[in-house]
Length: 232
Image (cartoon, rainbow, N blue to C red; front, side, top):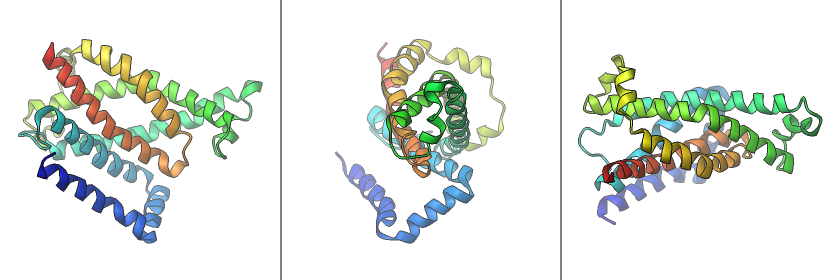
């Protein structure tokens, strides 16, 4: 580890400490979740998922912020994707248990999802995660990849987000062997479905936050995928 790594660790600790030391900070976090949930989702994903990409860059390139990384652009993209994710989570959280409750064995699932941990809540969380990750996740991951290519094409300039994306061009630039063979085929069943099953077992105030922390892991996956592509 280099000095910069210890500095990053120190900054992370300093950012997290107030939530444990000062109750008012934690209460403000809960109030934000209640009154401005989409703004909070923007900040959670903007900060944490971008940090995940920085970690991925550290692994891949040896530096957290390589030239033309596009820190602001990535923050904004992740922020808006975070709003999309938060909305999707709510849709699937309501829709999947609601639909399954039409069948007698799952009649108690909607109530179980708002109560203490039970076997029914675990089953409900798994069903929500399964549906979300086999329908929403591939589209989300592909859109993020397209945005990533768009930022790279414009050398990390945040102003590129105001320009139209040539979708056909960018979709053709994706390495589908890696996107399908690693990102979809391996990370979805082996990581994302179990991780989001755990997410939907958590209290509602922590679900989007935990999903954003998973964005840090996504950054590591993206760096691994990039290294796989470079090795081919």
